[in-house]
Image (cartoon, rainbow, N blue to C red; front, side):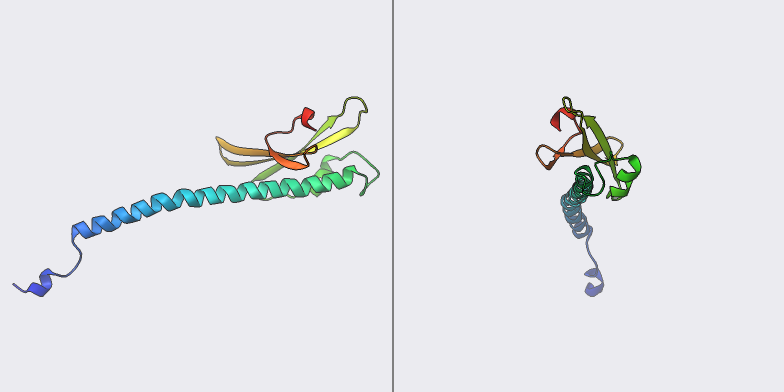
Length: 137
């Protein structure tokens, strides 16, 4: 029997060890990758809301027009909407003075059961989690 031929190749045990190591590495890497994709989508949504809220604020303060109400067509012209994001403009009438306040709300849907919603809070001048609520304006 030729000893050289008997020593060539990998044993089944070596192959199993390599497959187990690859499985462990992918079990660690895939969730990290998916989370980074999710965080990137959320950051894009917040950026879209912020850019649109700035444009709505400029319009609302009369810098672009003479305080005319924002129409759907005007909002669509302002809207900075990336793929996967849906931005909407909510309007509320303030009690007392009757002025109109605007809220930009954005939703990104990851799946049928997984979505995130943020809005621009005028009081805090910040993007916060959740839907627009008239009492928060």
